[in-house]
Image (tube, rainbow, N blue to C red; front, top):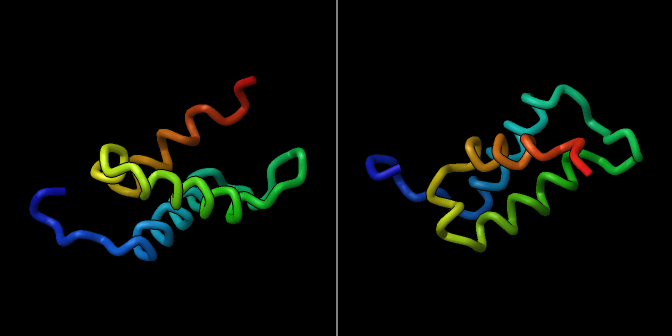
Amino acid sequence: MADTPELTKEQFIDRYVAHTLKTCGFTKFDDGPDVESYAREAAAAVWDDPMYREDGPEACAEGDMEYWGEE
């Protein structure tokens, strides 16, 4: 991300949520929670850690989704 301007927290969260919804293809988890709400919370947590944030919102969302369905 060195050549791109720094995203605001809102921009980061919006892109993370949009990518999550586009990639996963559903809006609710099987057990009921809303994907968008989950993604907003996850994105805010990622934003708080600069080490993760530097990967960008899309990469962070994909990394999170890799663990869905695992127990």
